[in-house]
Image (tube, rainbow, N blue to C red):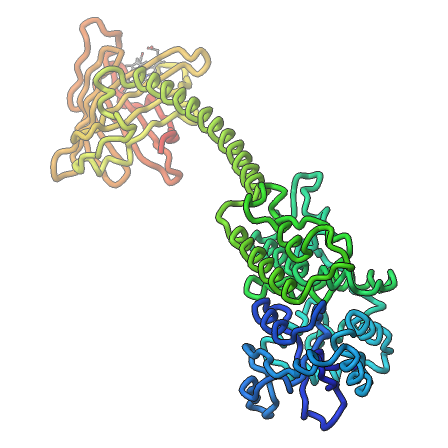
Length: 570
Ligand code: HEM
């Protein structure tokens, strides 16, 4: 690749003269304002710079350069604008004079070499063999090192484009025959309204690329790419037609071109790449246009037309450099104004749809949950009604006041020594009944020993026939403790017509009592009970045992009953 200065009347090229005496600097393609300043200074008619266009250091004042600390290498300042040109020579001399100087330098004249020279440069670069690559890299690398940091930032590819450290030029020179497969060009790269026109549309599923691309960055990249129309339209039209294969390679290369950030939205990246002819007439669209109307007063279309001049403008009626600069400047401002839409708080239609779907899905889940809660509430309500019914049956009327919250009243501390008796007990196995005058028998019995916060226990014993389940013996009463002692009084009323008081002692989990007084109704059955003895104990298995012995008018003290209960309540 031959690098030569693009200035009028300048014949400097790389390799000519002392090495490093003259450095070459790329046009700031991605800095539209500065580019316009450069173009105004260069004053080349009907010429558009590309990434392969350079100005040599002779056109910059000394203060345009700075020196790199490490190696004192000359760097062009990011704000530098060329100002030293021999334009008078051009004015007074005809094109032939310039051509003669170029011929002397072995190069085509600067003001007539376009577009042939640009195309020739590219052809040279693309025809480089692998063996020539190091040289090309070195040359371009030297140029890159001589460029300012901002230019390096503009010219260097992103890691996505190529290996670290490789330049755009490297990539173009080395990989023309194996262009990298475009990776989601419409999603992550610089949006191309022509090549990727379909990608902007919503697909069959209704999901557009906006669903996957941050709204601002995607739109920014696309809008940035519009700058290429501001500068390259005429350039493209005036370039000699390249073989179709080369154009295809250029398109592929452009597809993998990294997008421009908002801060670097310039005509640079796409400027060097000639857009397909069809794109000149395409109306670029805002990325979110599929979901919203374009801005009424600012559309890219006028920008394109501004650069093109009249739609019917042809090569036979070329625009002057001033026209190009002015129209390009206007187009740049117009395109830059589009960025105000990139960061609009208004979400895209696809985003709204996506959110709406999520909301509808959540609403559906919420509806199901509410139905479940409603069913559960009904079940709870029915259970509460049943519980109230049971409570009314078991604790009718005022007794219901004793356990309004289903919590037992606090036990009186005085009856704590008898607390092991508390609970509901069921006979297991059935009780055994014996007596010398009787046939042995079995019976079932349910025992309730409770308290209501008073200093006594309430009890009820309810016997049933084990087979017929008919009620048999029943008794109820109270158990009291003499304060500050283990003395116990057992007061019982039986369905047989006996009322008795037994007294005794509680020792640990054993209560032994004997009848203190027995009364009976006048018409009670014979024989009369004259003495009763009982023993309650909580055995090692946690079961309650009761043994009843009695003496009648006919029998001495003899065991009548023995039964074991198991506790059925906590
Ligand atoms: C401390 C409580 C009890 C006393 C004081 C008591 C007293 C008596 C007496 C005095 C007799 C008559 C005995 C005879 O004829 O010689 C009797 C009979 C009987 N007792 Fe008891 N008894 C008591 C508890 C029970 C219990 C819990 C049952 C269980 C079902 C029961 C079932 C019977 C039976 C089946 C007879 C024979 C038939 C009868 O006379 O009805 N007794 N009892």
